Length: 532
Ligand code: G4P
Image (cartoon, rainbow, N blue to C red):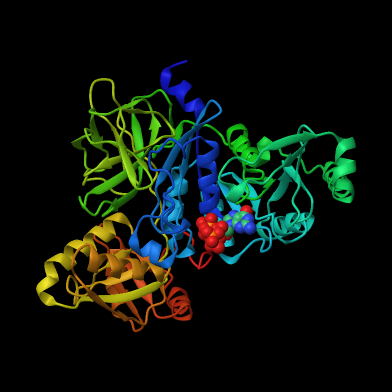
């Protein structure tokens, strides 16, 4: 077996999605604890001003708002595997970002709050998972607190998401009096003990059925009966339906007290698929031991205030990456140096010397790279790589942006271009207002907040946003553009990369135009309506 293939086999690359407050950050921290990465020092969770300053929350705005917008990557070892945990933004307004992160992940974990079940944003983010056809595990968190009945939660998952929940662990004790879990594969009952603030791993004891009967009485009997019922119903984890996104292995636990965290991490190792040969634009799969190639799934500037540099996050898809190789940016064909390749660990960075399929690299100041691009090694024996394009989400919010102080126009233009290239917001220009007052288009309104904040703080160009009458967009072409522009209630605008978007004041109006002029090009974009 070649080295890239052997190393790929050890990789588990996944993302966590959840409604804000369900426990994504806490669970991430606990994964690091179980992965031994917390004591290692490098970028460990910073316990200063409260938990919100956890490793992956670094931007000021995020801290003010208590939301996670940007994403980072955490890598740690667990058992004999290397785990790459990709952080996703917690708010559905950034679901396009989540989609891009999922393009770099091989699976996801959906975290639910036991008392709340499936919440609005869980559903939106889950739809993104489904769109990407990515398998996912479910972690039902906060079992240490009063919550819903476990069987009722399974029903809720099944009915709302239309996937079959197949519990791997089953809780003993009611929410609020959580004793431990039965592992349905081994039938063993593991009891947990709390530690102070959950700062160390929860001690575990294997308890015999006889002892459980004595100690846990009716909770044990009830859990056993429920587990038997699940067996009768055939609710057993099944790798095939899991990989097809038709079933989801379910784990119960409490991230806060560490109960059940180890089982979930074992589930990641045992169930999440290791990186597979990646589908290319030509429909072929690039084998894992082909020369180095990677997918750019995120571009982010301003991560480090001191440097103001721009980082392209690249998921390695094939081969062995070695720092210092000359790489080619697939879209432009230009060469660039990888001397400054880094691993990203929350706010901290380390130089990376080599990486394998499933790993994520941060390429510093590779300014040519855009989201969706391929990069590959230059040199003899190398073959170009190109991936199917990442679809753009349909924006549903449109604001006109003007710089407040015209002497800052240059900074404004630079900032707007940068945000567009990062995919933080879509920038649309029209013939009349063009450069001076572009329309910013977003999937969710919070993107405007981020854009305004960054234009002011990062680029020194405070802006004023004014509302526009538009509520829906369709992709069109140059030919249809002229005719659409002559109509009332619609305007055609263009993105820097050339795409034409027709903006309509209402869906009703758009449907009328579609019905009256079927010959016009008006294409739907990903996730329209379904996600907002
Ligand atoms: P998020 O990233 O998904 O937004 O959620 P986060 O981990 O920040 O957790 C949100 C809140 O839920 C936090 O409380 C956290 O302590 C709590 N929490 C997470 N997991 C569990 C759990 O298993 N059991 C219980 N009981 N609570 C849990 P907070 O009040 O916002 O912060 P803090 O005061 O606890 O630091």
